[in-house]
Length: 407
Figure 1: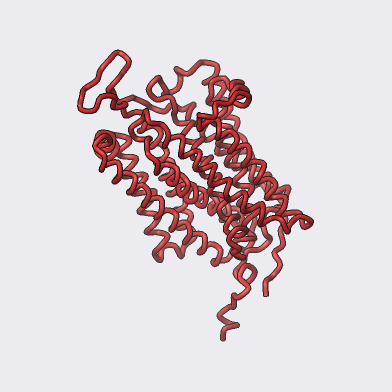
Figure 2: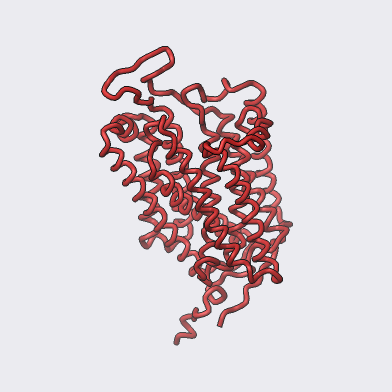
């Protein structure tokens, strides 16, 4: 027999809560100050230049946008695929998706140099540009997920939650496909031009979003003293392991197919062998720390410890940031091969590897976007009923019996 799940707000009156809000608010303020500094002094105070036009803020923005889509995956499993165990987790999943997208877009807008130029992007559309399509995808995501939350929280419209959930699931796939297609459609960059970028970004979103969701869930229940059983944690950590393995598979396929084509041999050698910081980030951080080590933790007895699950989730996030950095910055740094087999040089840096060193204001703006997302979800669970009062094993699983009951 299924037990009724009760949702409630958190008290939010403790010293720890106010300390968390104060710290996150301070990071947001510092991020806004960094954005003002870059806007006031100009682009030259950043590490970006005419060769590397997308810098560290874009790494944070893209990571948060991709993770937003993946954070909704938990809700989708419950609504679309009718998995009862995931349904109590759906509300937190949906609100986390909204705030992560908001944090990512905040970084993106504040890095425009003149944020008012967003008005131009919203009123004049070039439908041959994937960027123009993404504006519809991002704004639509906000609206659809907001309606999805409404159908989950209002009993009078709850019967429509699965229909809206299916629509949200399709939309989020389109959103992440659009983000990946930004790179897949850019033929002017040797490392970008690949159709596999779109599906790879979809599975990356599953991994990044679930890692963030798992951390938020674990800390939310630890800090509020609410029961969180092993059944939920084990199910989510196993799912995270599958997604990490899938991302690793796509990365291998992407590089193997690029190595098969002679035109990509140069950029592959750059990323895999001779790229300096990009090679280090790829092999050590993305593959080693962000993929292999989390898989070892999640699929061995180490995962019996929740501290190790937290570590694995953090490593997945760090590896994901490194992956975006290698794709975005490394892909821009390698020069376009205009005449295969020929050496090209000019005063416009043709044939020269682009140089980029992220500056402190860029990083602070990125962390400001992360803080916006965390601050928003903190307030959300304080004022609205997003968290179940208990996710104990005997509540979440109708077939659960204790050892004593089993005899």
